[in-house]
Every structure is written in C-alpha cells, then in structure tokens.
Length: 256
Image (cartoon, rainbow, N blue to C red; front, side, top):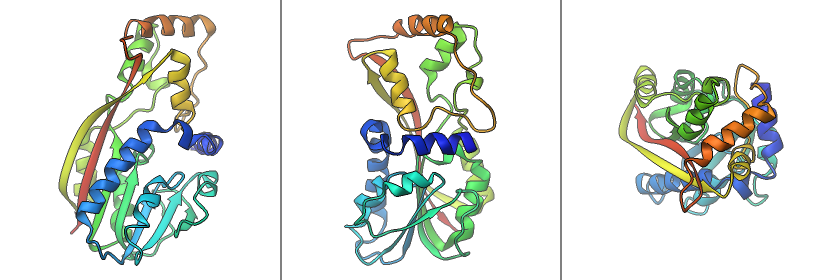
C-alpha cells in the first residue's frame, strides 16, 4: 500500500481541481446524511478517507454542535484540509483506526472503501460506532473503468494488472452483515465522466491519485501498446468525448 499512499500524497494538491466524479459522489453522500441525521445532531462524526475534506466542509456548517474527525492514510491530504474546518485530523488506515471502541455516532466514507478489504473496513467501523450508530458509505463496484478494461483486453493485456479490482455489491453486503451492521438503504448508480482525449482521461485518474494498485506494481505500457489502447478507445468516442464509467454503491446502514 506504500505506493498507493505515495500516489495520493502526490495528488493532494491537484485533487480538488480534477476530482469531478469524486465531488459528485461526495455531494450525493452528504445530501443523504443531511436527510438522515437530525438538524440538532451533536455527536461525533468520523470521515474515513476524508481526502481534502470535501464532505466535512459541507457538513460542519450544518451541525455546529457536532464533533468532527477527519481520517486519511495520506498525510498530505490532511494538509489540504481547510484551515477553518472544525475537525481533528488523523493520519491512519481505515482498517486500523486509532479511535476508542464505541465512541463514534456517525461514520461516513466517500470513495475510500475500494482501497480496503471491505470485511476489515466494516469490522473496524462497527468497533468504533456506538450501538445504533449510523454508517454512510459510497464505494466503487466491479464494472468501474469497464471501457478501459475492454481496451486493455483488445490489446492483449490483463485488466487486473492495470486497473483497481473493485468488489461486488453482494460482497459489500456480506461484509456488513458479518460485522453486524443492518443495511437501511442501498443504491447502485453508474456515473460517467467524459474526456476530450485519452491523455485527459488518464489525467483524471492520475490527478486524484488512483494510478497505483495495492499489493503489486502496475506494469508500464510500451509506446506501441499505448498507441493501440488509444486507437481502441477512440472507437468509443461520442459527441461528448471519450467515456469513463464508474459503478458507485451508496449505503446507509446502522450498527445493531
């Protein structure tokens, strides 16, 4: 995971400028939170994988009596948190949070669980949540980057060696059930970003730090293979540009 952490650290200063999809998902998740938490919520809310604090910046003004904790495994992401954001920043892994058991009233995580073992992330969320504590998670599912996967296959390459392998909705649900978390609502949505050319498309991935895979080194594409990939991808062009699809799962759940 060191390469992944370094990649996100390098992307910290550019993250907000290119993270269009990330911001859309975060805005949708915080909108859900606002409908589920009471207007006078005054408990502890933890943002697991907070990035530059986009979710918290939307929630802090809504819940002035609440206590906020921002957690990210990339320390430079925490450096990007707004100076006036009322949140305690913690540099830590979502699978091993330095938070006392049963101290958190609400747990949110926007597009971070795909970098974790969902069973471990769910178990850790359960540990730190109070009984009846709320969990709000958006994560990526299998089918994300399907256009890139098809392009890589067309070039004779194994997509699993180049793209993040996301889990299925069933696996996420199983992880939550095993952690004794009751799912209250669940929705899967395909979201597509559009890009002028392949270079811009790759930059949208690199610019948010998602260009390294956990557990192994991503093979470097040769110039010839990259040319073939670009040509294969051009076959998907529409009037809007080149598509890049994400399968996004959003869950509201509660610790039993």
